[in-house]
Length: 213
Image (cartoon, rainbow, N blue to C red; front, side, top):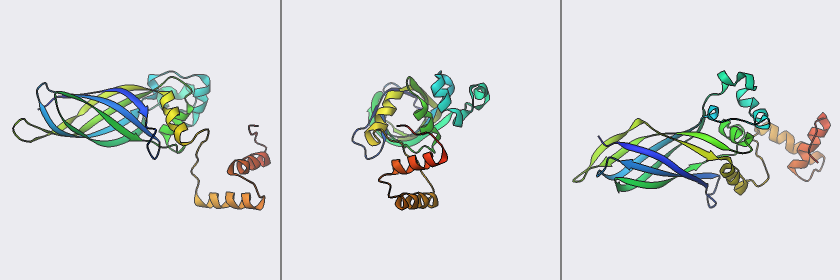
């Protein structure tokens, strides 16, 4: 059976994607001399939050995910980030490929809330690989990529921030139920408010909450 190893060497934000997208650079190595006609690859990405430290301001932003620091020993579990498929063209021995990973800025998604809470440093990722390889020098052999293939990678927080700023510069995004949106729209219309920002500010002021100037 062909042995495969995987290494993630880089990541960048895709400036031309229709939505927020990260592109991971993978180096794939097969048993020396093995001809791989194609590789149908699956990759599951997880955030491993326990593999880095956090400033107090970051810890405050992570409360809704993991609770207070005193609870992190039992509450800080891996966070699902993405699961993608990718077809790798044929190669012999070793190749490099780019793995596009569509992302979201939906703050209901745990991975997004986690990344949003970080101000600097890196996001510790675990990449789990599986799939099907089509190999053989004089024909096709179908082989599975073993489920224990994995790679770790520390993604710079600034890459995530760059990706978000490309699509939502200086903004956030919140998903609301239709009934709540209808009520907000009615509130905005009744008071002739010029924007959603002014609508939310008016609600915060009415409730006694403080808003930024």
